[in-house]
Amino acid sequence: MSLNLLKFVSRLEFLSQERRLALYPPFFLMRIKVLEISGNWDRARFKLPLNMVSKNMGGSMFGGYQAALSDPIAALACVKRYPGTDVWTRHHTVDFRHPGDSDLELRFEFPVALDVLIREELATKGRSTPTFEYGFYRQDGKMCTQVRSTVAIRPEGYLSDVGSCSG
Image (cartoon, rainbow, N blue to C red; front, top):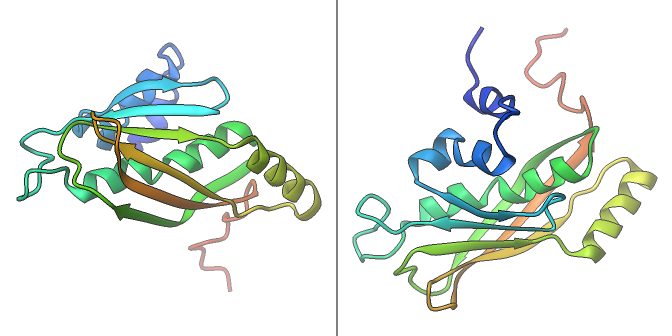
């Protein structure tokens, strides 16, 4: 039996959801700070610090750090909002528009209209594949990176046969 740190940390219910997320090993190693997560993930904000490890050769935020933080956010929001489903990132793009030359803040908002559409698709089709747009902002308030993340929301157990050797 292998140890899955994400599952282990998620079971530490005596910790707040913000603290559990901050302890997620990749986030912990990047020194990410959870600034805000609303109860139903309508809104979430994270601080991604610019430091000697996260700087690229040009002195701005390494793009891999931005991709690593932004990738699971939309999927996590959907997992919290739609119980009884399996959710994963299907497509993720990170558009670097301006240098991230300060600490960055990831700002995620879950649009009400998109929630209505997802609930309608889950009720009628049993699945949904929505796309979310959010971004990273510099300390001066300017968006430096736009993120587009498409997630797959499927019935629980949808992937249970993946990787099996059934004949």
